[in-house]
Length: 247
Image 1 (tube, rainbow, N blue to C red):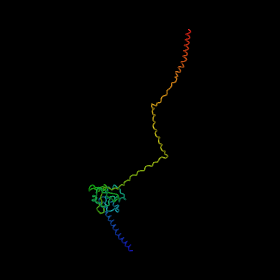
Image 2 (image 1 turned 45 degrees about the vertical axis):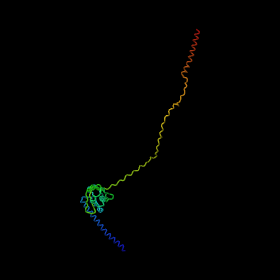
Image 3 (image 1 turned 120 degrees about the vertical axis):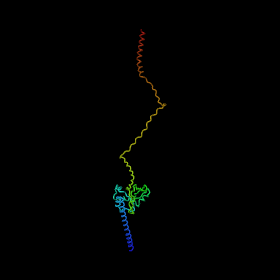
Image 4 (image 1 turned 90 degrees about the vertical axis):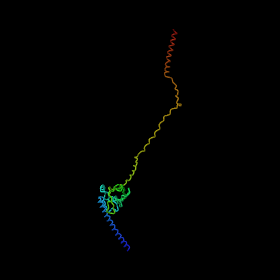
């Protein structure tokens, strides 16, 4: 029985020492945030101070704020459920006074309290500093608490746009053959051009057969007409000779 009682007593002592310490730390952090908000309001960054007051119990400590001025914040709309996300995008998880920021090499990238969001530092000499091409205009505003640093900027860190995925190529449309379609009849091949027959060789030219002339119809008619006339002349000649001999 002694061991359980000793264990319970030990845990009670530990809890009694831890809970007040946590309560004191949370109370100190809240008091420090309120002091930082007063510093921000004195520097005329009233809109950013209002955003911190809306979520002050969720703001982490040991951070550096980069605060857009009221003119820049008046151009955007921040939904209430995105206030903490907006503040985390405008803070880095370390204490960076302006003297340390100005010593960073040109092109340095710093992670913010918002996962996967980076701030790129670029400097134009020791007096001008840019974060994601937005100028830091009011350095070292917060001076009331050891757990916060604040710098004023003249713009807003907009959320990174997601990279659009390349469009997928559309599949080719299915080829539907018409119903009862008959295959095309191929055209007949062109007939070869006719070659003219070769001319006859001179040595093998056909010899015309001799034509035997037949009796001319005119000759036969004339001969048939001459016989009676000759007979008549012979008769007249004989009669003439007989008459001469009589006389």
